[in-house]
Length: 287
Ligand SMILES: NC(=O)c1ccc[n+]([C@@H]2O[C@H](COP(=O)([O-])OP(=O)(O)OC[C@H]3O[C@@H](n4cnc5c(N)ncnc54)[C@H](OP(=O)(O)O)[C@@H]3O)[C@@H](O)[C@H]2O)c1
Image (cartoon, rainbow, N blue to C red):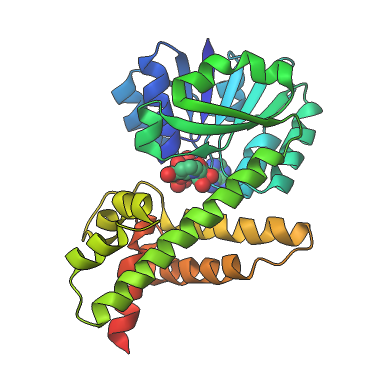
């Protein structure tokens, strides 16, 4: 099975390593080619100099792109490619996903959206959760690819946009919960409570799983970026935008989006999104 990987950032490079390990033949394309050269060398795979070259000899194109504009820019470069299946793993708005699907259908390409729940490490281990929307016959033919990356594949609908909407709804809850946990830690610390006692108490409650997974990551001084803080801001903005398109307000999402935007503008955009705790702590220290 020959695949083109479009976008070799944190997610695309992890997926590439996993797919290569499982015997898929892959070719890599990335907007900034220099970033891909190291990855391609490590994996022993080919690089394509253009999107047209990347898809010229494959049956499947897998996109791991930052946002709506990245997706639409890549999709608009796809020439007529009858029979190609384009799988979009990026987190985008339902509207952008539908636009990509409609454009690609004029190129003879079948579009499937498959947003991922889980970060690069989980994808590398093949243990992600993937939500899928798209025509059943195309979804059926990518089962092997999805199974390589995910332990849980959930078919949402034939209608493009629904899996993306659910992914945004999930990230809205996750990113807001992380900000809320960070805020609560800052509050407790302001009263001289130790991190140990805060963690101990929180972990005995309904927030047990969240605390076990994120408390230490939030308070650690330095951790490698798994999910960029700027992309968390993007997901919150997309949740608000998707709600706006349906005429419903999401006041909490808008507030949290602004918080992550501020942290991003303060220079934390490329850092892990859990740096939101350090940002809030710094804000507190300034008052
Ligand atoms: N990291 C996570 O934990 C995680 C989990 C689930 C879902 N996601 C989603 O998965 C997607 C990829 O995330 P990531 O963590 O891999 O992000 P990333 O490391 O920032 O990679 C983003 C990729 O998008 C490319 N890109 C950005 N703008 C572009 C444009 N205008 N045209 C073409 N390519 C463009 C980048 O190319 P350059 O190298 O040239 O900048 C890079 O390959 C995002 O939608 C993210 O929200 C991430």
